[in-house]
Each structure stands twice: as structure tokens, then as C-alpha cells.
Length: 88
Image (cartoon, rainbow, N blue to C red; front, side, top):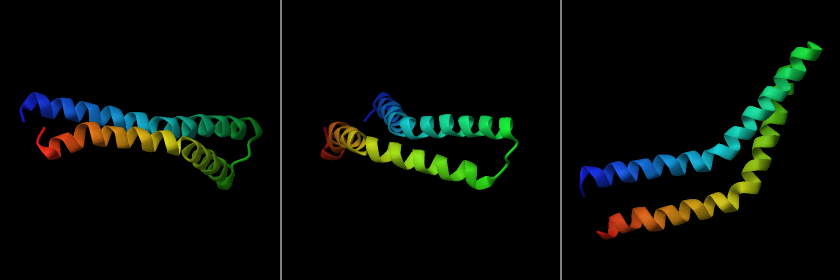
């Protein structure tokens, strides 16, 4: 295995990580900004007001995207990692 192969695998691994994490992190960002805007406009500074809706949104997006994320990770593992383990 050459340096180029290792760097290529690292690049694909980082891209896979980004692709898997992007939906959950994106929703957390959008919900956090929306709740922060509501808090700034109404001057209500309650900690549970930020935590509970963000947790619910993250859980919902994770639940919805779980099948696609699992398929994506399995295909990456089978196409890249298992071939390296098998000596391909």
C-alpha cells in the first residue's frame, strides 16, 4: 500500500464522515439559530427551551436518515475497507 493509497482512503473516509454527520449537524444548527432568534426577540432565557427542541429535532433527523446512513456506511466499508483487509 503506497502513500497515495493511504491518502486516498483517508480522503474518502473524511468525506464519508462528513456525509453521515451533515444532516444531523445541519438540523442542530438551524434549530439552534431559530431558537436563539426567538429567545433574543422575546427575552426568554430558559435553558430547556434550547435543549429540548434541539434534541427532538436531532433525534427525528437521525431516525429518518438512519437507513440511508447505514446503507452508505455499509457500502463504504464493503467497497474500501474489506478490500484492503482481504489484500486487494
